[in-house]
Image 1 (cartoon, rainbow, N blue to C red):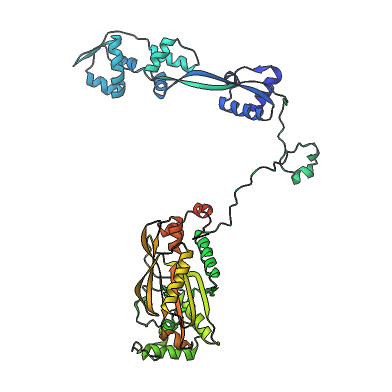
Image 2 (cartoon, rainbow, N blue to C red; image 1 turned 60 degrees about the vertical axis):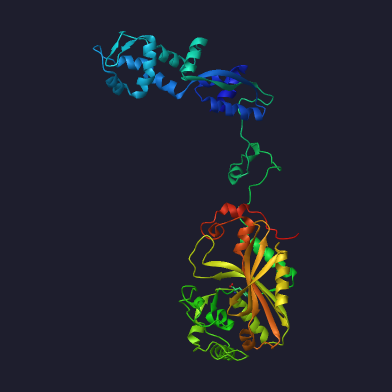
Length: 488
Ligand code: PHE
């Protein structure tokens, strides 16, 4: 409607001299007229010149008084002929009107304001302030003195008004036809496509940002970890079984059946199917024996090992369960050294807090070969963590049921300027390796760490729930940068 109004007016007249007046005359809002003018100008339908004017507008307070009268007149009108106490008068008009009105009433000498009685000194008063305010609303121009007084009382303020004067442009037409953007089935059916004007393609327009296909930070860091392992000649282990038997997760790792980690407070056991069906029986027998009475130079734990306990299915609590399967199958063939790694999910029955979830990812690496030593382990950890950008390492003696010796790994974080715990490691015990059938001189060095911790450090996330789970902000996933670890 606004567009037709502008084009039609220009058809009949040479010029719209002032878009503001034009808006008032045609009863269309000025904003709407301005939008139309800008759009018509962009397509050369019109030429438009800017007009700027200082105009006076009422403040909120000014607008209220234009409607209800100035405070001073309201105040005087509230004084009855017999007079009133100041308190009563204040209650009648409200403290705001009382306070403001009072000054002007006194100045104009419209009333006597005694301590105990207020009496009026005039019968009728003309609300000149209100009249001025109303004239401004009507668009009238006031004299400079009046304007100054209203501005001083903050009832009116200057505003720069912006509008246009408009003439026909080089491409002026009485009507603007919207070019069609798509050739539709209806156009073909109605056969009106021949008469349509089609919008030209804009081959320079940028497309919408792609909505899907974003990688989670954990996936990006996982890829970097995988690249590091591959560069170091490691082969990935098959980790595609979240459900594992207690046997491979614990027993094969020489973890006694009374160990607290095997409690349901720490481990999720499966209800259905609650037990595993197949285990290699002769190997199971050797594991039972090493737990109960030892062998291979060990005294064992000296307890009654129960098959039912080993059969229980669980959600694997560490990817070392995968390592135990891999080493067992390796032992079934003529021995050749191997380097294995994995990065996958594990589960623990933990209370969730800023740094713990009931599921997380573990990075696991192991090397098996004849005659490896603790020095080899330290060397390979040095190599691995240097590639992650941490080349200052320290080791602290630790305990795992399946490794001896065991070492916690600390790395000096150059950013945090302190030593942070970055992983756990060790050499697998003979009680674990020999029952599998591995040759007696084969040693296995291994280490593990979480994927979440380095990811949080790299991406500056300090609450794990912001990284993983239902509370994650999807825009983090959509906008996080590619991860590049270590030396390029
Ligand atoms: N499995 C250990 C853990 O869950 C990590 C580890 C792996 C330790 C290999 C030693 C050797 O913390």
